[in-house]
Amino acid sequence: MVAGDHPEPGPGSLAAAMALGDVAAEVGDDDEVWVLLSGGASSLLAAPVNGVTPGELTTLYSLLLGSGLDITAMNRIRKRFSRWGAGRLARALAPARVRVFIVSDVIGDDLASIGSGPCVPDAATAADVRRMLEGARLWDRVPAAARRIVLASESGEMAETPKPGDEAFARVTLELIASNRLALEAAAKRAAALGLAPVVAETPLAGEASATGASVAATLVQNCGPGGNTQPAGARQCFIWGGETTVTLGETPPGLGGRCQELALAAARVLDGARPGVALLAAGTDGRDGPTDAAGAIVDGRTWRAVTESGRNPARDLAGHDAYRALDAAGALLKVGLTGTNVMDVVIGVV
Image 1 (cartoon, rainbow, N blue to C red):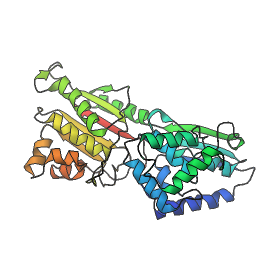
Image 2 (image 1 turned 180 degrees about the horizontal axis):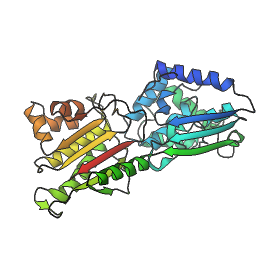
Image 3 (image 1 turned 45 degrees about the vertical axis):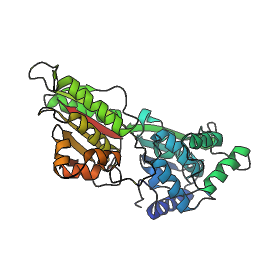
Image 4 (image 1 turned 90 degrees about the horizontal axis):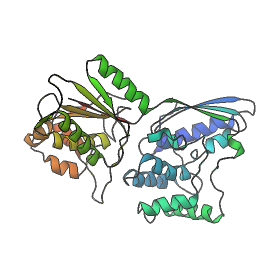
């Protein structure tokens, strides 16, 4: 067992990638290999491809994490520069039989994106990666070594990543064993057992965390908020969303927080003054939101005012991506410890 680093790769990630290489080297042609893969592996197992240093890989990951790109787009780029991403682990294990059991942390359960697809073909070309970086205004900001690799692959000077049809995948099978949808179904079942009528959103949460927080809070206000009590007397509803939002950072160094905390603080502004009985939870299923010790937060109609009364400016904290300190001042942070799994985020609103 080797503990890697997350959300940005570090010495532990490099050690984990090296240990995986040692194991792969021992696999024989007639062996059967079980790969247990979950979200976070993109960073936890990150070692650079030849031509990129570990420091440059960490810089690249950091830029992508603050870019506002969703996880699928991020991983299409990250896997290009990661030793085991983009099907390269399958190539190292071939021709052994490989059975991959996957816990999904991406919207739509795209198997090529989860953990940067170590045992799945990479359909994206180098030209696709360049266009994505240009579209995110990152092409001129990523390390020069990364640009050289993309251009060399695009020109044919360097080999492309393993593509669909590559014989490396001939004996690979993939099975999805856990996902965000299964988590939402479990939450709905528990809500019903508690006497709450569950309403599970069909559309996954995505986009900017602050805008999403305002939107989901508006749903709660519309159903049972100030000025609009649209539900029958005594009705108790539980609105359940799942997915993964993003936070786009500016040039100014951000404060402390994560996407669930930013979503919750934005929701608190909309819920400000809502009557008792209306509350919202936003949390990462892995128990850790961003680089903090909180999974997320629980907010209601008193949270925004509590932040203000503590002497902080919640609007400024929200704009500066400093949701952790604002929510901590209001006693709203949710700290449950690491859960040992990761199927994206859940947002639960109770009315």
